[in-house]
Image 1 (cartoon, one colour):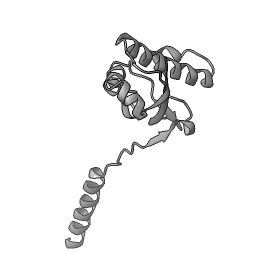
Image 2: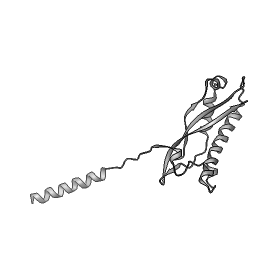
Image 3: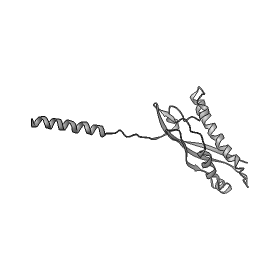
Image 4: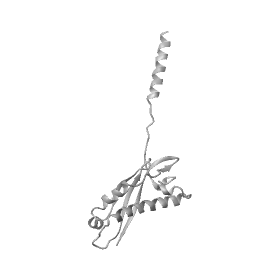
Length: 150
């Protein structure tokens, strides 16, 4: 009888332990060159070609940021011919956030509010379709160039 009760208790111990085990969810950031599907801007998902969808999404993001900058009527005192690099993160839920902005000292001196204007433009971006890798939504970082010429 004693042996039977030990077996019953030990089975209960193992059953309870397996119920408490959880599988951690790992969200890694993936380079957009290694994904199956690039994050999509809402109006680009109806395009049949994946390459054209990617180009459409990059153009729409650029247009959106250019419109934000243009609406603020930036005045640049000196001639500028420069490119800044805006690193963005589209998380696995489709939310877009700013990672960093890489710009020259000339741009920083000419347009001191540039970083906050770009952040403001990114904050009002519509939710995107997240990137897909092996059938799963993933977070993706990519760099968007913005060219300044006057």
